[in-house]
Image (cartoon, rainbow, N blue to C red; front, side):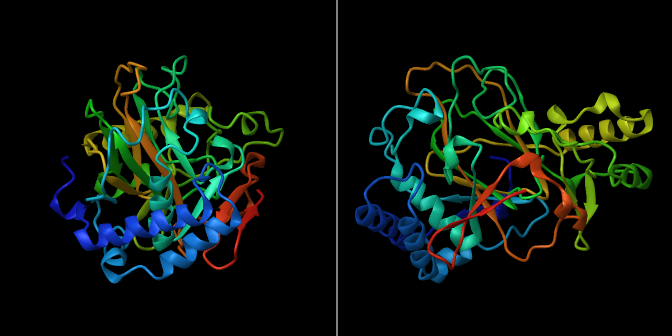
Length: 341
């Protein structure tokens, strides 16, 4: 895992015990229905997260390197106990439910967990598994194709600030790729071009309703200076680059080449949680051949909004978001709230 020693945060045994016991208690109080959690479960997650110890809070501190990511390590994982890797996300049901709650607890320490009404049935924790018939798509269900580096949910102004990937199974050491905008080297002219709103970013194939939205797609900048350094919004697989002027396309190509140059490969181990700053880092996945025999790679994904964070252009507030609503697990009220775009 070539992310550097400073990017690995080892959870102390007492912190692991505290977190695991908290998740198990929430499940015992509410049953194991975590697929689309009821308001009471979300409320208990928020209340419990507020009382977690300083060791856990320190492990969940903001990303503090230009790499824009870190790995939490030390959570227990019983490969036999979680059952076989689901064939598709929809058949995961409540398998490994304690991991859903654990990720929600960690996400709530970091900010506000969010979900999408148009993706995986409004779940706050997604199951990322290879699915037969989707091998060549640019979605988490693919396998044999390179999943191109991208900003998570780049099409939407309400996208997460942080992306969490919890590894349940990865027998083949399939690597997640990551590249930080803080590591690239671009000419001033390229930065200026890419800071203009020239092209839209369209919804990906996981959002069927958004792809049929009737409104005009908003043109958005790829780069933006937040005052603390550059941030990016990038998804070449869903950006109509052929519509760009030659100079802009050339600058975009140079950014792509730079992101490839600084890319690292992170092979998660079972029990690892990768936390990616979605404003700084694009992530993807190397190709692999799925067996569909219950032993394939299985990740849990959670998305986190950080209240008060100013890393995006103000103009994003006027975007329609292709009609997609964000569900936010409030850390104060007792239920999720809906934000329409």
